Image (tube, rainbow, N blue to C red):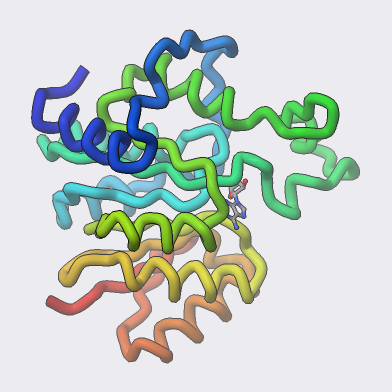
Length: 224
Ligand SMILES: C[S@@+](CC[C@H](N)C(=O)[O-])C[C@H]1O[C@@H](n2cnc3c(N)ncnc32)[C@H](O)[C@@H]1O
């Protein structure tokens, strides 16, 4: 459990979004499973130390491994804050591939055709005791950005790790850059993907900011 200030920020954001607490009355129905990719990269922890974010947007969370790591990093840095966890919880094109030898398709936990990632995510958050820090937002990145804008939510740190094709990465960078406070940092994942690198480079050129690569993470800072 975290302190009262942190609780009230996450609750405040949940109330703004839902009018209630989405964790209220939820009993985890799945065992902990924090499968993820590059979710515990040291760059994420270092950026939390540096930025001391009040609000983090994690765009593309899968089962919540990066959300968990960002929350841990905030606690370690003594930062009171909330992580808004944005995902369709439907998986990305690379997961919808029954031919992958790692059988990632099974991780989608389809039930009559609908993935069950959200329940794994929510269970994980409760197992880790993160209800007071995490605000789930089960939406496309495209819808989440205007929803947050309308609620006047801005972030100090944004982690982009949703779809990895060129157009969606560029779109997400554009959408979420607008929600980043001055002095804030946008960090993306999977720079080794050619499509991600091209989009990151195109966006950096578009906004005229230096692109820093700590592979697989890529970083853009918003001037004060
Ligand atoms: C690579 S996974 C995220 C991994 C996660 N950051 C971790 O800790 O390992 C990508 C996630 O992005 C989500 N996603 C893909 N396209 C999306 C979109 N347009 N809007 C929201 N989520 C999306 C998928 O459902 C999937 O859970």
